[in-house]
Image (cartoon, rainbow, N blue to C red; front, side):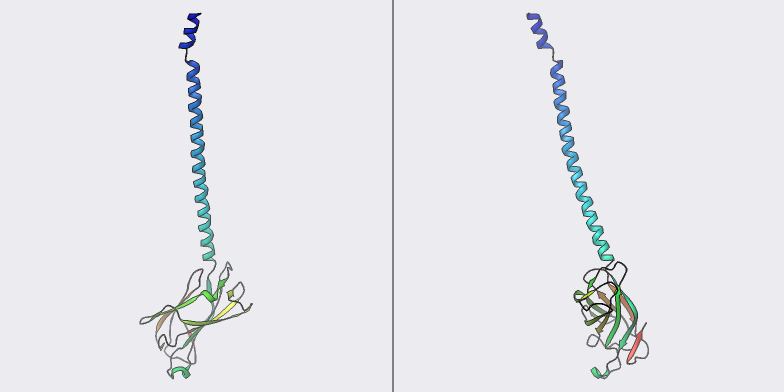
Length: 187
């Protein structure tokens, strides 16, 4: 009987198989945890990417464009000088039709000698409702007050930049003509 017991005690094949099964189980558990972490990071990254894309699309589709002429208005009753005191232009939404909040927009004026980052301006929405939002199929006439920012006389290069709170800016680069009338079309 002693011989049989010694043989059983020295035979470690079953014990080695059990160790291998435990190590294999540990590897599977570690691999599962690692793959869960990697998948979670991947899902987080793809969600952030989707958020960035949607923000970009919203920004790109919330722009305005000029419709019609840009005109300068000379109000000689303000200062008696023959210069442009107001600039009028009409805007509408570009393709995409995400509304613009006109009450949150600003207009900047820049010339060779003057930069004013916030002109006084007003708007009138027509062809739609009369709220502050410029929506699809609506147009808004913008009137920017130049008087006080600079004497905008003949042959003066300038830029107006319409900056909505969301979306791209609309830059109008113009030069005043050699003669300024009561109403002058700007090219």
